[in-house]
Image 1 (spheres, rainbow, N blue to C red):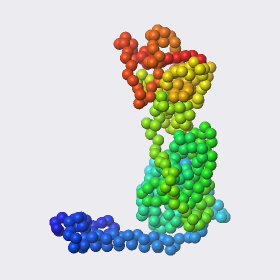
Image 2: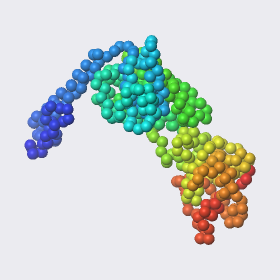
Image 3: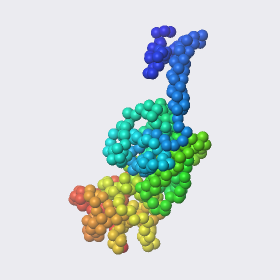
Image 4: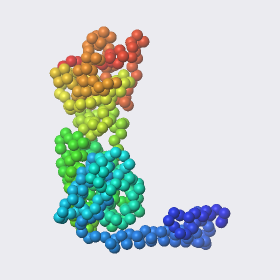
Length: 405
């Protein structure tokens, strides 16, 4: 039996823990289990003793000593308002302010350096009981339990959604993408090793402006969140005493935006869906489609365009050039959407694309059939046969069906 036993010293423990003894020892032998439980019991006890010592010296009202965790423009709004609060001579909410950020050239780091705030490079952080509360805004890194417990009031998070809806790193993008009519900001307490599941201290609700982009909505929520953060800090002990756990109902996930989300599926997506997709991710990840196997990026979206009944019968992926508005129109599931600029090897206006690739001279010269002249979705691309006499450039130029409006 003893040959199967492994002796290890657990990090931070003064005792030898026995790993695997309970798998091999007979039922009458509980020595191994007792040693393991005692070791971890002592370790857990030491953690809670540290917490009690932190709690003993904590303040009961502002101004607070704050350690701020953040990276981007959204986080910057909260950092600015905390910094401004520290500068006020009366009714200060913040007494001292230091910053934790990633080791990169980020908006939060630039602001902190410009205003001579102490900056810590993640993950090299050791609060050592010097702060009352931590604040995390758009940080993107999980915080360990031992770090959270160093703050008497824990660590607060400014999250741009009405939790539990849109938990995750991209709540603003998914709010726009899914056409939510209302959204808001949540101030919650961080829990270790999980994103966006902690108890809620305060929330504010707002309407989502019609046709807004993710960038526009994010900027608005950043300002709203910064203001709500200050209001929460003004009465922090009371807010914590009245905190509420998140509901188990209505929880949704907001994963990171990726390139696969940018592919337009003309046969399945409606005009409204494509509009929401463009407003959600278009400024960061251009919408994509295929034409004869070549990637085309769709830029400068103009929205849904009304056409005559005769043209409404076109199949999804059909292309029209509207000369009057200098717009390239593409048929989707329930109508036509327009783009004024494309990227095909280089940036082209709709007029440039028409003059270089879509002119009826090429259509007449090669007698192309309509089914060959479509934008294709990545998932539904079909192979098209060509005769060897055409160069690759000619093939690209010819595979389009155009009706000039």
